[in-house]
Image 1 (tube, rainbow, N blue to C red):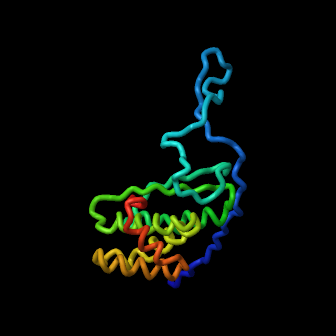
Image 2: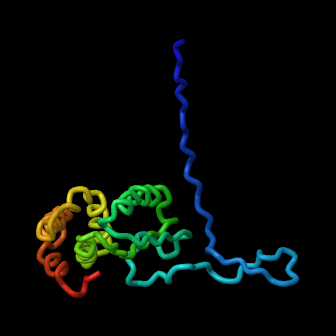
Image 3: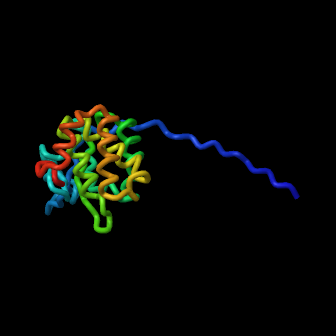
Length: 178
């Protein structure tokens, strides 16, 4: 007998605005009629965001995502379009913090981090532009030798409109060493 496949329409819900609240830790108080419901202090399990962190979004955004990542990690690269979609959807209600976490076995992890940081020496937007290129083109450069990567990343800096002489100097400097 013939079977008909029914097409099911999947609807995507509209983005719900994020609440304007500070994440908190709930602490129980003895004698409190609702134990565990008194707000005592901001919740944080990670080191506080610092001025030296690479940030995309306002400091007063109600939600901050701290990403510990490696530009050569394929799983980290899979997260990039998801984070980009979240930024697009929630705009100034979301702040993304990037922190380098080079993983063993990724031979160009440090070079890629240095390239992003060298781009960032020309402005925060330039850091995020290089961040995107490194993740989106990871399949292109991951198999390169160190010298091939250096050449490729210099070309990317040029295509992003960076001052290529400054980029080359910063890329090799101790100041940007990740």
